[in-house]
Image (cartoon, rainbow, N blue to C red; front, side):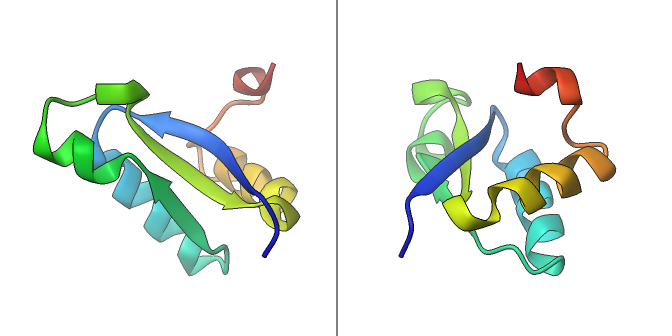
Length: 77
């Protein structure tokens, strides 16, 4: 398996799940980091829930996030 790349962090697990479902419906396999700790404690612990994808799907996932309104090109700078 290739390396995982963090695309975005969410302070809300609900927002994370919505974006994850969108990407997965488009064929992108998503992974989460720090989701359990953010559900068990306060929101945004450890920088929030991190959305990760395989390195081989980063470009496609970023474009889908931009097209879906979940990410702005300037967020990538």
